[in-house]
Image (tube, rainbow, N blue to C red; front, top):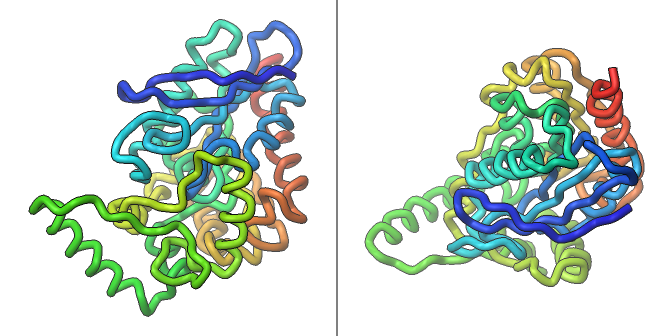
Length: 303
């Protein structure tokens, strides 16, 4: 299997990607994928990409604007709508390549981007299969899990005060993604600090432990499942972790059962959020996604 660095443009900004190609000449069905909350392409995503490429899919893993090796300012601004545009521009880049079957492109997302792919799948009919893993269903719910319900209203006031200050010329402020105390940061979950600092920093030197404060406002307001009923008939696989303390499974399962039509599949895995990247449930999540894309992109393409 071959892989190479590529660059595509999103709204005029260069975005960095890793392109994985299966054996053969193509044209290949394809998958576009990007990471979740603050993370960059090198953090565990290549293992998913290699699995998909082994199955016969071309895979593009990319960094959003403002993150990692991609361009864009201000750095570390995490805007879900911008990131969704980056996904859709990545799809366009893949579809324009002569070794890609532009009619058979799927998308994969996890955590924050697990929400992105739900919103994209409801709007973009170029997408022929979706895997949404431990998805963000509503930013407000995630914020309560990250910092505690009792702190959210005070944090919202801080964000409103900051918005006013920015309008009046104040400089950009940043918040740490994680810290050892688990306080005054974006991720306060007890597992987050070790996972981000011991793993993300080692795997991806371009990852930064900070986000603009605007990022938290946009996260809190994010509600990617408003149009989830429009995803069908695009096939959707949703993978949830039943002990997930960051993107809790309950809201995701409710949306899956009540708003999303067929064809669809729900996989409920034990353990927690980070286990789907390198823990006990990683291989199961990886295989379920590969099987879903094989069924709906490769097998459909040869009919």
